[in-house]
Amino acid sequence: MRVLFQGAFYFYKQIISLLTASAIHFLPLADKNSGSQRKHWHNWHRLPPFWVHLLPILIWSIVGISLRLINLTAKPPWTDEFATLVFSLGNTFISVPLDRAIAPDILLQPLQLNPAATIGDVIHNLATQDNHPPLYFVLAYLWMKLFPSDGGLISLFGARLLPAIFGAASIPCVYVLGRVAFRSSLVGHLTAAMMAVSPYGVFLAQEARHYTLAILWVIGSLTCLVIATRHIQNRTSLPIWVALFWIGINALGIATHYFFSITLCTEVVVLIFLAWLQLQNSSKFSLFFSPPWRRIYAVVIGTCVAGLIWIPTLLENENRGALTEWIRGSRVGLEWLSPIFQALGTLIAMISLLPVESSQALVVIPSGIVMLTFFIWAVPILLRGIKIQLQHTESRMMIQVLAGVVISAIAIFFIFTYFLGIDLTRGARYNFVYFPAIVVLLGASLAVCWHPPQMETEPGKNGVTSIGKWGINGKKAVMVIWLMGFFSAVTVVCNLGYQKYYRPDLFVQLIQQTSRTPVLIATTHKTYVHTGEMMGVAREIKLADSLQNPLFLLAHQDRDPNASTIALENTLKNLPRPFDLWLVNFHAPVAETAKKCVTSNTRSLPTVDGYEYELYRCQ
Image (cartoon, rainbow, N blue to C red; front, side, top):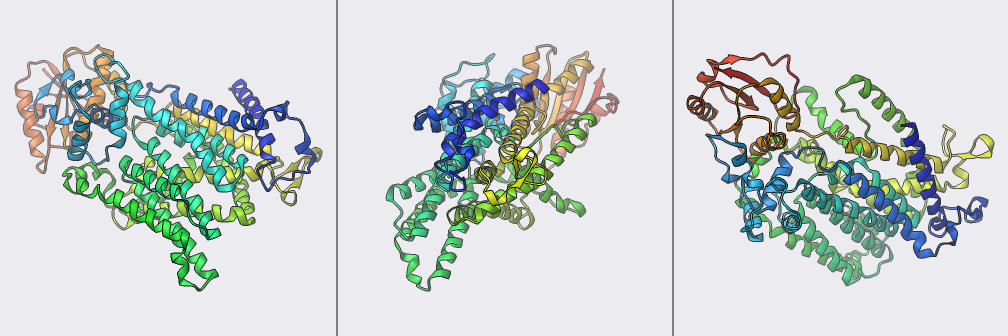
């Protein structure tokens, strides 16, 4: 670990030195006459200007894609990923039989490549059975044709590679956003560097889901918002190509994930704030019909049209309520505080996440202490950077715009959570709607650390200026913060952070160690989410190829819990004995036939994430 840390520190020191050569000309906070700026950093200054800017972006992109590809298929897919896999193939979960015992191959049939499926099938199945728009699934449908099947099933590597590529693409894109927002190449590079190693970004990029594509649209839309802000400030007309690009990006964002509309709502809040600022400086109401605002109104109208076309699809979908039950529910007592801590935890994990989710206290306690110490040290430094940026007219407005996006998004989350009973904070992935704004604000703050104004520094040892009370200079502070992000990304890659909700691999291992006879794995079924839970188990059984003739039962349950009990009863009567009955996430009364079997004591057996089980040995 020490060698790895030293190597990473040296690597980053060499890379960050390259940034200095380009930062001299772009960051207004830097003192261009200082002696430190005249130093030659390993002859990087001799590179042509184009390469001085491009090479760091390439390096951050390589670091980012490498982190996103490591252990890409090591973690088993979970229910949401199975939904992506099935619908992207043009298949459906309806083909899986309910209320009778089925073999793993039948359960996994929707994961088989379907040459007869078309893009129309993808769109139709999503509109009738899912609650997501189709853009990503259509792209995944075309993408998966490039990969052969894996043991007769869809390639998990191919399915996860697409979001990993989109995640890596966000690195140069967020560089553009940072540079455009602050007119600083250094801010852009530091933003890209932090995006490359963000544990939250790596987490989203290693799942076969659509969030990394949505992040690209968020970056594009925020870039247009930044450009529009400058035109509002200067009272100049927004270029028509920007307006059309903005509408197109917003339309694609809505077609990728409906929660992209939360990003659009935050932009509306920011525009209202900008209008209020203008009204304070001028009493002329005609300002709202000036050139920049007329084009912005056109963008709003175009975006609304692009969003309204999806309303009929949402209203006709009968499954939308059942698929969102997990984020609905009542609270009592201290549960009312849970959303606050969930939101705070997601914000923290965008920068740093060590193995605090480990089951071993010897790992959790040191990791928690290191993270706490890190944030006690880093937060004042980052806040100081934001404070200094607010002191400069050019950067103040951009800080206010991006902070407005973040604060508005969090406020919307809490409105849904506390007033509408829909706890959006439970899904960390939903925070993609403001994640790029957080990263850009982080890059802007780190740029101040990299080139602290002379009046803000404090003399330290050996004449080296420090940026705080801990006696560390700005460049080293940037390195430490980046390295924390790097090690946090490694934590996610190793499944020690943002751990999978379901561990079918561990559950199958438990069955292998416990059962010596054929097994029946039964669960109650309401939506395809429960089908996905069993698909994970069936896939692991197929990969292990060690269980003899395992069977699955998806006992459908609508409003009457006894329906699942009856299905279980009928199935048990027709199975030859002996066999082991595993009731997994079975939320219904146990059948009388099962009660006649020998109940196994599962207290001595380990718990498995995502799978609550009971074991009956039927002789």
